Length: 285
Image (tube, rainbow, N blue to C red; front, side, top):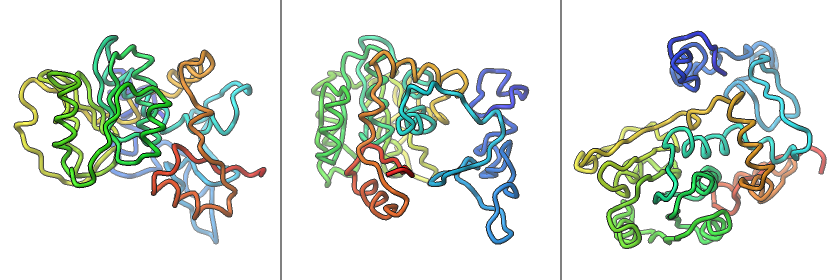
């Protein structure tokens, strides 16, 4: 939720607002949002996810955090736009600004990766090469627009074998590569997949300390770790919903399964074991 007046906001970087960004404030998720005292349990404020809340019937937010959407989009589809969809689409269209005819590698076809695939299609990429270890997610990647699929060998921990397959397809490496697994050891993997002067985008927000071979940066490669795909919800939500309405972006199809509130353990198990693209908790089934 950008303040609109700080240095970063005035320079167009509203996603890293100096007043309200939780990253800038080193985990102080209260920054800019409704205070913890607005939602309490046994007299103590509840730390809600991003101070917005999740897995709950109601939440309290400040007015700028509420984005109006048309009622003709199913609520189950609208509710996933705010993180996984926005981050995936924004990473392609806002951060990398993928060019028509380019070659793209997507490492991991989970909820974010599938939206990177879709956004690469919207951008006009000629090749969308997906690396995945899960058969279920390989099939999903195919359905969401991947042009080439590489089943990752579980023993290929640093994706060296997969890199050779990418080179066979691209000749010199991809123009863009997006890491969406959240696995710290793969933080440098997009650098491995791009050509000289290509762009490596580390989407999943790895925050652990890792070792990187600086040779992977040769030559002229760009490595970037964007927050929320550089999106401004007031601007990007309407764009994303317009892509959905004109058939360019699948949202309904991203919802693999709906869960009741008493099925949370099943929902987490499905997510952690790669059985679903996105799961949604609903309160009326």
